[in-house]
Amino acid sequence: MPRTARSIAAGGFYHVLNRGNGRQPLFRKDADYDAFCHILADGLRRYPVKLYCWCLMPNHWHLVLSPENADSIGRLLGWVGVTHVRRHHAHYHTAGGGHLYQGRFKSFPIEGGKHFRAVCRYVEANPRRAKLVKRAEDWRWSSLAAHVDPPVARPEDVAADAWPALTRWPGRKPADWAEWVNKPIEVAEAEAMKLSIARGRPYGSAKWTAKTAKNLGLEYTLRDRGRPRKVREDDGKK
Image 1 (tube, one colour):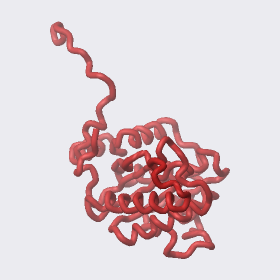
Image 2: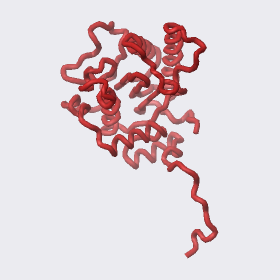
Image 3: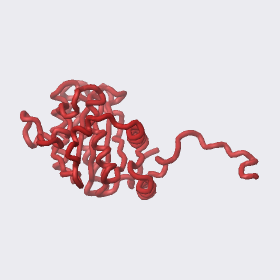
Image 4: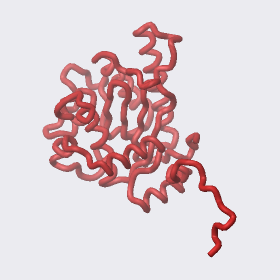
């Protein structure tokens, strides 16, 4: 079902994801990751969106954002996507060779507090879960290094204006954040997160999820998939 214009509200928290077309690599070498970081940093200066955490993976990326206006995320990621595709094709001489991305980005709303932290943990743990590194903070293209103690704002070989600027988290971050990120995520939590990613379902407490889905026109994301149950003639008879 197409996403409605109401599904992103100003001031809310959102997980945003996009993948390579057919899960093809978006980043073939280190310089590709760094180039995307520079594009994202430029975009954040152009559009009023706060970035709380992020992670680039070989064939997809995750961002946790909060827009100042309802259309800010769409405008930011529209610019980032077009700029990235144009520069990627120019660098690899692949213009006309097909789509780089699978399509429009996917997003879902996040409740604040523990649910916000759970999503950020899921995002920053990606490289460890994918076995790209032993410790999640060893992955260069992630916000986790900026959330450890002491924080590392960016790699030493990168200029300040070429790395995505983070916004201070709402509330307190756990002191042992890096250790928490490196622990296995419970199966139920991971499945709930994957469902939100796949369907755009709001991620939070049951009451908040129902209210948010209604307010943003996302009630269809709460319904079970599959064909409607066939109504028999004797349904409702005692």
